[in-house]
Length: 486
Image (cartoon, rainbow, N blue to C red):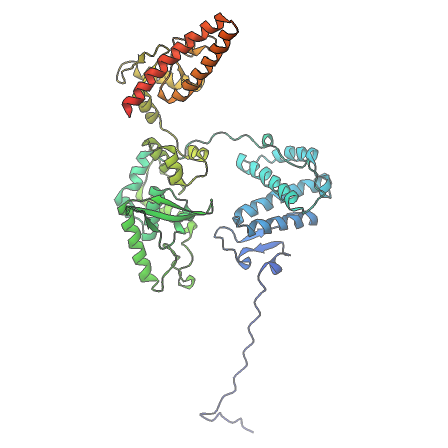
């Protein structure tokens, strides 16, 4: 029989579609047992980290503890890169344990850790990486004890501050004014091909935000105080808190323009000021920080930015944070104000970012009233022939002959005949910044004189009477300067 053609209007037999394949199970129950955790399946979005790997840990019992530690750290909001750093430190320690024939946690004591430190030194890691290997492993031991994950860990299994490699003080990373003048020039800023990246650059320069905080700014990121002054409101991811930084009206207008542009692109309203342009993301994911860094390198090349030696400039976005702190300090902004603008927890961190330039220190030194032990003002003509040499001597003296209450005016090459009795030394120089120390010292000297007189020690009382007289003259002279300044 001849196959009948389908009659128009009748239903045709269509092949059945295959049912969609079941999606792999996601969540901790599925990922925890794996040697490679896929962060996206754990609901953790991280641009620079997609997985955490445990395959490099040879011992199953150590791997179990490492997974438990990593899960707890991620649950507390720790950045996945830091969790991955801890896993690498445990893997390196696991290799050492395997080579040493150590098969259980109970044998990990201080003596073994000293052997590990020697073995780790042979890797010739950089100072930062070496410190991370030790610090992460120490944090791992602390977590085991705190949470009771394995009670067999000896109490002597810990590292001390002396175990870490000594880190030399890092040089300032602030950009020079020559470079910043080029970067801030409107013509160069207009060379950005991406308007959002241009605004991000301005925010990084003027507000000192970290790049992650800048790209993740919320759409309604402008706040006002009672006087109507604008502030940039952002979330400090490192400190896990919201922060405010004052801005000017010009930057406020630029941010308002970006908000209007986002409203046109996302009529439904994107929650971010700089959403990723990919339409499937619906404006709820920020632009890529790695994409900004790539564009930054191309922008520097287009603008032909050169340093003080005529070489092409290569910089990181974080250097603008250093530069802002240094600029504020050199404009005589108090360090406490700088700390609040940069949203640091401690003044120590602020002092690391903000360094006084030599010209600022010299300006303050020239302006400060300097007196000797007789309360006589020490003057120096800033334009005189010995000004540069005197300033150089002061700089050297501050470094090599620092005193708790002033400075030594004696050349470094000469030995001091006064046996540290600076308040009886004609070369002693001090300024108003040491007034609190002088007042405290005066109280101590009065107590010494009183006790000496009560015991009949007239010679001791006479010696301290001379120091007391010098202190009185110094405090009077420096106090007069403070009164005149106010």
